Image (cartoon, rainbow, N blue to C red; front, top):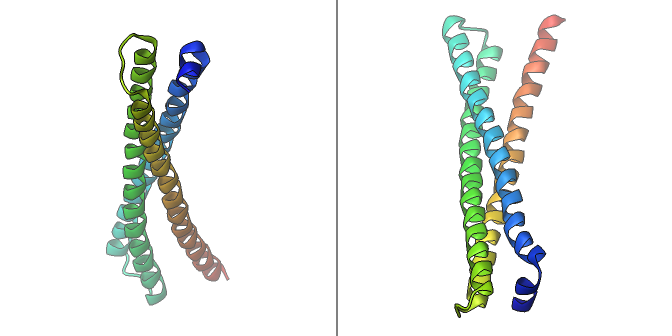
Amino acid sequence: MITAITETPFAVLTLIAAPAVFTNASSVLTLGTGNRLARVVDRTRVIAREMEANPAAAESAHLWVRHLDRLERRGALLLRAMRSFYAAIGAFAAASLVALLGASLAASNYHLPLQAVAWLSFFAGAVGFVGLVVGCVVLVSETRLALQSMTEEAQLAKSRSH
């Protein structure tokens, strides 16, 4: 493996580019998750104001309370997803840095146990990958909660229109 790194620049490029691509994916997901969290905060404020201004019928009041509970759970899930994505960004950045360090040391006369550096880079990349996957799974759970709320609101609106 060490000879492949020193013989071709494409091996070094791959070691650096792969974590960079995952870092970008994690960053985009973090941005989207932040936007989703902002929407949850906005929706919570709107429902709280609506409940305060219009003490509604029992059916509507129960619906809004369920929505607020769901919004709290969604906010917690989104925060967990953001933590996972931020951890992934840090881990992928570390993997890129360690891979770059290992590649530069392999090309020099410095005799460092390159296998240890390779394992460290792999470990950092694996931690990042797990963070990325966990964050995505959490976002799916949050999306299910959002869909439940939307379905309940749509059913209430339909029942009122008849």
